[in-house]
Length: 202
Length: 202
Image (cartoon, rainbow over all chains, first blue to last red; front, side, top):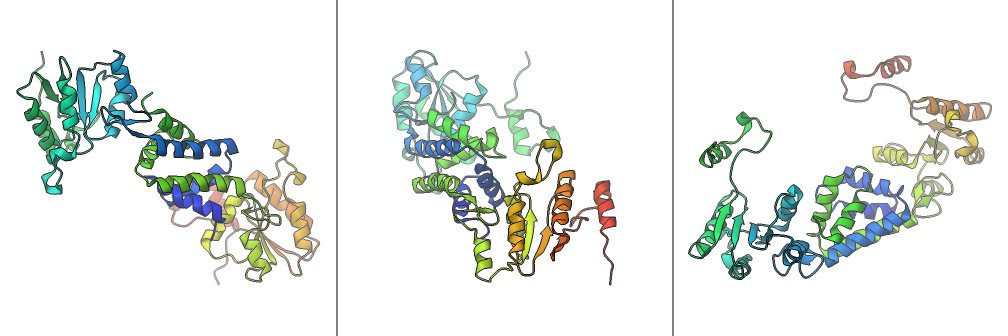
């Protein structure tokens, strides 16, 4: 009732974005009125384009506009290490790794974790496609980067078991202390993990 | 480079909203991928609709989808007090008043404040249309609700002068202490204003 109808509708749908509440949606909708109309046209177009065109990479299941994602394409061109595959739960983790700018291999997105409690088995996530990829490589290395939880551990162990008698180097990310924290604020499990994964000072 | 092209474009344009930075735009764009496609279609449609259809009320200059805003229409139907006009700097203030739900008059949006330094004179803001409106009323009351600044004061005094010899009741909002603050955190000017505008306890 307070806002004109078309503004109310905009606010209603802006709130569907994650992390956008009443206040933010109102401020966004009002600020849109000061934008050049071409910007709103482009915004409107690109949002819909993205939602429609984005799908999964046929090889690694990461997010892409095309059949094969940019990273897999770069590995085909020899610009990324095709033999190193980082195994992740979801495509958001791919972007987190890419932001670091320090990883030069490829990815494999599982699209979930094995969780017997929730009825999610190995066949429900992208493990068979991982096996196929690894089998096709000459000198494969797998880096498992799943979250440290019961499901993460289960999935890590399952993947390790599959490849343990094949000629595949398998590692997982180290557990430990994140940067910039006070030790006394850390939870016990993180401390114990950091202790167990301790590294010799050479 | 990190995100697929269509997602990068979405992020670029989401950042044009006021208050949306890099991180928020990324989170919004990624969360859009989990929305039903109809929601994104509607969002896209309503944003553009709102930007295109919203304009100024022919009477009070507030924001509306139509020729005359909802509030002026209600006053025509006798559902709001047509004789009371609250004078505001911009349409955002209209929504702030409407949210309170306690004001039953109409509004007049000036679209700016008199500011000789910036070369903004009385003819550059919607004062002549205010005079015309007030002259047409039988028992007009004007409530000036401008921000307490040099420009706000100048504009308030100018409007007061125009109507002082006509049969118009003119007031401004009281200055004072906002709710829920500690007095010792208030700036001096607010305290002095609260002192000057003090109200007798009867």
